[in-house]
Length: 277
Ligand SMILES: [Fe+2]
Image (cartoon, rainbow, N blue to C red):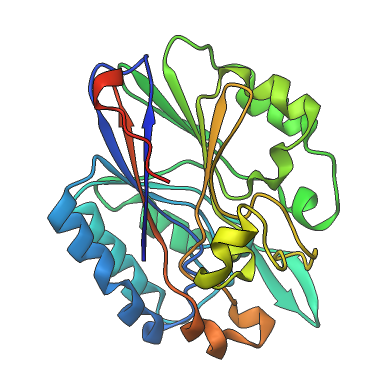
């Protein structure tokens, strides 16, 4: 299922088209059949970028990782693939405990693919815009460590002379007064993580941006999907490819939800700007 958003930035002289796909939760070869539509969409639409919004892997170690790398390589032949890192990408579950682990071999192989850019607390810069990719630390996801200092270090340094896009797996850390101040130079936040709040499509209209349950098992979470604004920053939250990860033990139910591909156009001029909800 495609979700389409049109936005605008006065800092841009040319339109820019971005595909955002988040939360693949890849476990093995069987998952690849769900990804075929991505290459078809890339060939048809030729976006400037494909953003992968984190949780590419369901667990830091997976089977058949080379097959996933081959799939990403196909996408990278069509466009620049910008990769953000999610909590599942840097953790494994052992004895029912979620532990930090980074599969360096996977990320090193991924980094070597032409046209793939991994933004692990890093920035991709062009003349009119920056794409800032930050990896929320394990301690903030799992140990409730306050994130303000981390955000200060990685966001504050960017001025507002260019359009700033922030790719962060979970925007849930950004809804506070302190973050609002830190985000003052950020034009767009692109994110995933919330798996559409597990809301089936038919209930989306009445639920608006709200979900039924969040990945951290919070009931009726807010801001789980869609486009909304806080002060000067536009947030776009992808409902994600996968709704139930293998860790949940309920992943066989995924067939009841759609895979989301989010198509974003940032227009350079008012005349071409059209709001599509
Ligand atoms: Fe996820």
